[in-house]
Length: 251
Image (cartoon, rainbow, N blue to C red; front, top):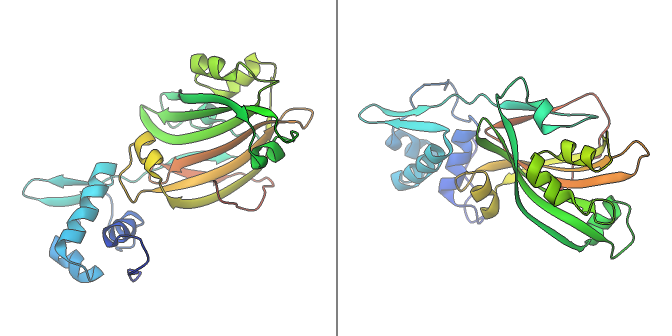
């Protein structure tokens, strides 16, 4: 069991929740009962209130469930496998794992491209881009939130089209891009931000897997620069046999 780190700025209850979430307590299987609060407190070297806060957060996430008079049990932790390869698509990637796959537009904005975005999209400094904030769900459960940028001169209607289709692939097809492929993907893991907690219905301390990707059209021109956050307890990223950039942090 990993020793908790004090005076790091990360609350002890969050560290306890992370360790339970990541399966550090060995021997637990789906539907097994967690050790009692007092035992967990002794294991982690914290008080029972800290353990109680950690379990409360995990219960909100659906990692564990409390049964009156019986204790707290570990729920099924089976994750969706999301393939990342030459053609990375949300709907088709999960079609055999979820009955419904939907995308929702949270907000959109046309603005001057930040330096990182203009470089990723091969645009000149100060070019205008369309920024979309979206959430994708499988069987009604949010699994990823994304920030995506598109060249405004080429995709000025992307927000309106996406609001109708709920699909990046379908939207690009309607706007003249019948196919696109993945140029690069960087992957990291971090604690969810407050915004991601809200968008993905997670509790404080939850882990998200972040991807930063560039997609290109048939002429190798960038069509999309995206930063996505996946709920780590709901999704497993499956890297296909292809070439990607080195992992980099999503900003």
